[in-house]
Image (cartoon, rainbow, N blue to C red):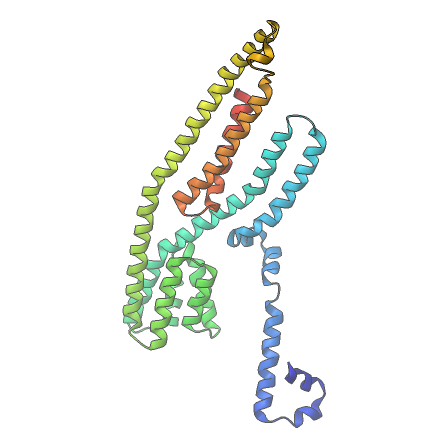
Length: 329
């Protein structure tokens, strides 16, 4: 920034600069302009296409859903304060805060999964064209006209970047930054290192394609095996909910009648004391809802290796518990 200060002093000061200092001044000006252009890029992208930005960065959805949930919480508490409906307000406050993030996390997971599915095919096509004598930028330009599902737009972005002079290695690294998954980062690191070393890039591309395909097959197999535990989690919750519902619908009324009979006989305090069935039913509902929410998070971690992926399971199980205790029992 010292060079910029010299530049601001006037053309007379610039005449005193050497050629090397003038080059440094030009580079400094270019970097300053680039930094200014890249400021608040994400915010500009959000206003341009909010849904796309949230799908690419689902964690930012909490900045929208949490304030909305707080507004609902304040309005709901004001309307139902001092009544059992407070429980419903709390439940739906939590659901409002996690439902949009659950949708966006699921969308991103599906998108990245499709991109990883087509990655081996893309790398294999690049390898074949490289063996045929095409340069890597030319090969990417050729395959960008093909169909690679969710990966097509990313390939076209790489081709557009290379048409502006960005190197093949840098365009791959930018792709890995946009779609930051272990499979993509591993493949890109392998290819860029081989390309910089000047080795047989075609053979490395083919090896990277084979490695990505095998890793994806292993991941699909693991996901299929772990799906059994997701089913077990659901079954365990429904068994738990059934037991809680039976206790609430049979045991609690029985104990309430016994308490009334003991009180009528004058032995209420010695037999059971004061028994409020509404309080026990409410306690059972709290237990079922908490169990459903936590079971959903466990199902997401076990089935898809992500707690955020468990939010959709938590929404389903929490709603099931709430519906059972609100409309069935």
